Length: 284
Image 1 (cartoon, rainbow, N blue to C red):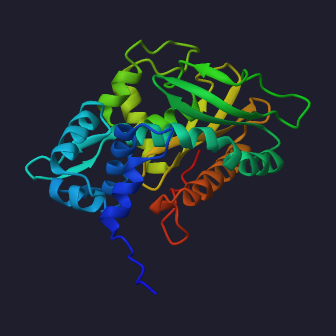
Image 2: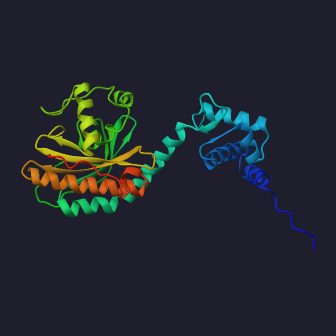
């Protein structure tokens, strides 16, 4: 019996890059390059990519140039290495946001059961805070916090501030470039004052909205972060003034922070692992 020839990794990958009858070869090859960069730990030389994929160096170079132009790949400054581009993160976050409501549902229900209040799951999309999921309060008297959809009140809501707190200052400025509308007498409309507020949010691990968006409504929110520490969303609980005493706000804070830490841990966020130090339980 003749010996069976098993092709090496390079040939296997090249064959895979060729695609099937309905595939476009250049697209297959470009995706193969991205997968290969990821498999090598996020960085690779042109020669290494050509060897691993079985493609010639010229083909790799032209495909990488296109991927760099579109933001899916990047050159490592000062080194002859190629890395995954920021556009990959953008798509990853967008994909995660589609899956986020399903993952967050049991945590939302838990907060609702414990507090009886309205609970929101939100994410940043562009310069808007988008409510992805909402659970109405169990009490007869409840707050009217709107419906699922977009809001331009990132600076005035607990979910918005919880997410903004983990972004670079330049990104915060971009998101708020359209202005900081005053919704109530307590809305923060000065950028410097907001930056100071966000420092407290980052230090404490949660954000407070004391009637900054709606009169008579207090909210507590905390961010959800992924394996890279990037913000992918936030959860908040909202209560009307008649129930928003310090004890009840502390309960909402504890439930929201516990839920976001557990959900972040599911997504691989290192500081949310069981042995990581939690947010400071400061007075609210």
